[in-house]
Length: 368
Image 1: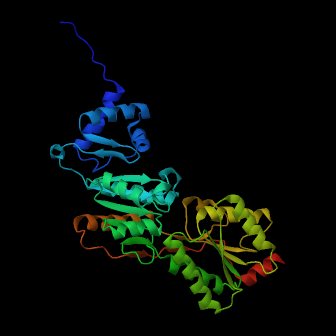
Image 2 (image 1 turned 90 degrees about the vertical axis):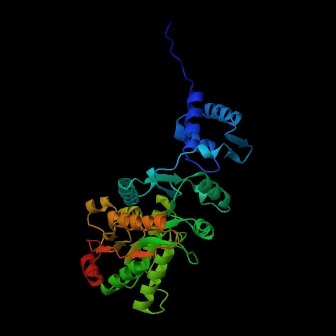
Image 3 (image 1 turned 60 degrees about the vertical axis):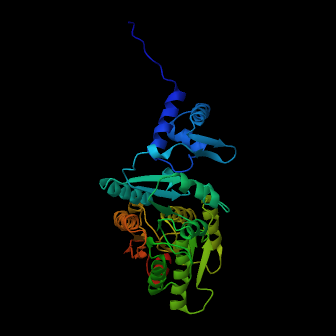
């Protein structure tokens, strides 16, 4: 009897993989969108569509125009899910996220993996746009996640998870009126401390450079900055200012140049994050202004590369591994006791004084 090699087409292989995933309870009511499914499986869209047609003829799925692919096959054959799944929802792809955030997500993934848990990362601005509730609902329905973690989330997304009683933890601050557990740095206390620190060094014209407050942590930061100004200077409107930045380098440079051309220019700046700090520092250097001789700088956050800058930036550091540990414990609580929400956690970071701040009187002497 002659031996023959049976060639299995890409379409048949794709159909088999999707079929097995459905039977193994990988998704709930809906399959992921065509773009994401094509990317995850590593096949072209034409091959994917042909595979879906096969599964539709088998009665396992139903392709609904402009809605998606609904799972309608016999669910009694599905195997019991072996692992708990944690879904991370973020507006940004993991490769564009700040390094320290990647560190805590990886540390969290490792700790969950040791317990047999699976962490899945879902990203896309379309989940965070106005009117995206149905998109988020579709994602939650089709993915088999025991708990969700929201990263850089706006109020609308937080409100949807809260209103629908979805097991969920916020990695960051929660917006006002939202009833979800969260873990974050206490940015309100941090920014208040930064103002008090600069005041003790004799500074009276302090500026906080920050993006528009779309995230709850940025709202808390502005609140803390204004509390510090009020505590140190009373209601004097000329002492402390909040200046909102566009994320582009050109806009940050333009803003710094505009501020330093003012007759009463700032003597100290609090800067939202490490990358904006780098741009502000460069813009000041290009204008011939020395840090801290003429301007003192404090960074609200930190990244590892700042250790190689001179002068070393004054900054607030929070261990990403400690942060991951707090997230891990709260996720475990949510999965095993979903009726009892964990208490919110606010972490106080370490202040690294660095060499980018100095006493105002010393600055005056050094610039003469």
